[in-house]
Amino acid sequence: MRGDVKVNIEDVALQNKMYLTFEQQDKAIKQQLKVIEKLQRRVKAEQRRKNQLASQLKKLTQQ
Image (tube, rainbow, N blue to C red):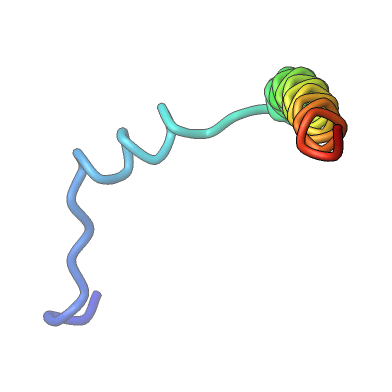
């Protein structure tokens, strides 16, 4: 073993703890996608509402 290469046992243990199986990664990604979809729906609803209010304001100012 070279003198300038050292492996800390704690680093190896930490890497092993952080390792996720493909199934765990897949589950986490699916959960994130669900959250993203919910946020997208919320944004679309807010945009619709904003457009409705802008349309109402435009109609009121034209009268």
